[in-house]
Length: 403
Image (cartoon, rainbow, N blue to C red; front, top):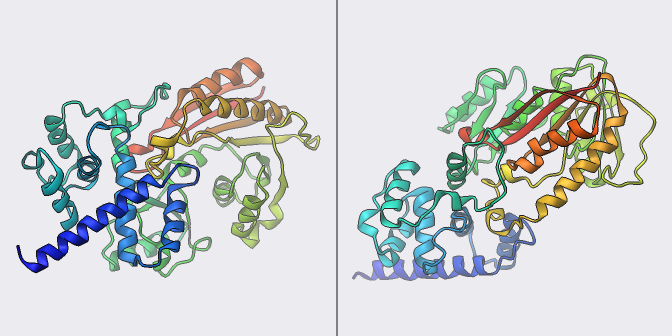
């Protein structure tokens, strides 16, 4: 063995030890990205290349869900990388040679489904459903196996280009030889490769485009608002749905509330000056029994309610290990309280739009049943947006009307 090969092995073994330490030190109490950033900040010896390497390996570990937990760490993490990426780097090929029992039966196939076939032949106990290892039923329109397997791939970074800038953004991206996924009507969305910093392009967020997931854009287009109407975005967050609505129906007026003052400030910063007179803000805990809202009635209410976020866990795969399923009942309780507190403020003939970024039936179709049973609203439409088919988040929406 040459001295160069020996030095590479030492570097790879040291990297594996660091990856193991990072995984062992994570308890799920903060987002994985924040945990890794904090760790790297306190260990200045890691350069940019090292940070990207360790982040990618740790994320693969969590994408593997609860599969093959009986295997030694080194073998299991090598397989996690294989199903996500194949043997596409020197370090992954080294791990395969060093730690895999069936390394000769796991070829470097480019397609993830092809890699899955080889993995299942070598490890028959590998179960795709353990990539999303929860017992709670999924929404009716979801293909369980396809959804579970989608978690081995990181979703794209989706943008909503503003009118007149779509082709310009696409051209600038092609100059950097980026592989884009471009959607036609109704969204005209552009999907960028995971991890790409869109700010490297000569365009400004909020002026030329917004970062908004494809499924979120599709759900936002379903909001049946008209000019000069007054709508309440009751759990507005950073305002993505409202910003989309304002650009689609420029004369609409919006009352935006959220429990978090800081995120309302974020919304205010994102709001273009031309729309500032059309949006009013207030902090409100709409799940609280003593929450009192002004005696105002709205043409429509958007309730993008707090939920498990399970439709987004391909972006945050740590939840595949650390989410406690019993928390679903807490989310469901909050959703019920929010609905019952806001629906009385809907005008006759008005629309109530319920949304989640969840894939669990309890938070989706289960809440549709709850709303029909506990209010006088009539169901107009409901749909699960299976974004995993497009490397996007998955969401659910239901539209009701008050007679």
